[in-house]
Length: 369
Ligand SMILES: *Cc1c(COP(=O)(O)O)cnc(C)c1O
Image (cartoon, rainbow, N blue to C red; front, side, top):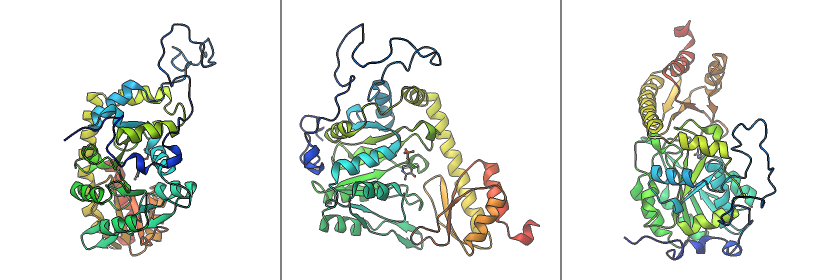
């Protein structure tokens, strides 16, 4: 298999980018060009350190894409550094993709609700039409209607198809073979974005392995969930190098704050990664325990199998369940405003004690008394 180089991308990826942005240079920052020097007077920074900033790590503007962190993230996610863009959470990458690929009013995105809300939010902000191909609720769980998504994308000339795997809030895992088939059908027409915010809990392979073969596949990863760094705002887009280059030029000049980059690098040490994967195993075990426990409760209509760190459950009376949990100090996600989820709550898997608190709060009143 040949490896696309940044200068000679396979046909198709850049064709998906808005024509007016293909040659867009973006903002030329003090850090855009690599030059050598010992006296740095090109960015109007202070010559002195802030008293609050001990070693002066923050006096200078940071690297737009910190080299060490980029290299480490690429290693961890199994891609080359030039196939990776670091953003302020994967949320920023979603926004960049919609802005760079979709012309307002013209180029739609396809989503499969109920799903993570940011795809539609970013599309709305950009004025990109939103085409919905609802997930299907089958006896053994939620399944994305990939054929419908693909057909709608083709018929309506959508530029982006958003897949969420594992799905939030449904927990559905989409097989790689299906993602590959979708990308194959949409070559040169649409970018298939696979949001893998929860993939570590699925114990399944990442779609990142398909990027070399299909430049119209892009993958979102984040340090916000398994790596316990939601507050640091570090997420990644893995994609064809030509697309990464375009998005870099659309991104803010210094998107990654230095303290966050340094922390993220420490959080990706071999020891930290070993701890993370051990925690993923614990979450999976608790997820299985909670699935069985919740299913045994009167008043719980249905609990969906989940590949994420959460469970989606339907209740006879979701309002009462939500209030009982709140009364016990437990806050879960009320999904009732989402399409098809008028009776559902999404419950994140916590520590064993926290999960026990969920179970206790949902006991029928007589049993709890
Ligand atoms: C939590 C979540 C994200 C993560 O967003 P960050 O901006 O990286 O914190 C992305 N996608 C989905 C589906 C999520 O649930």
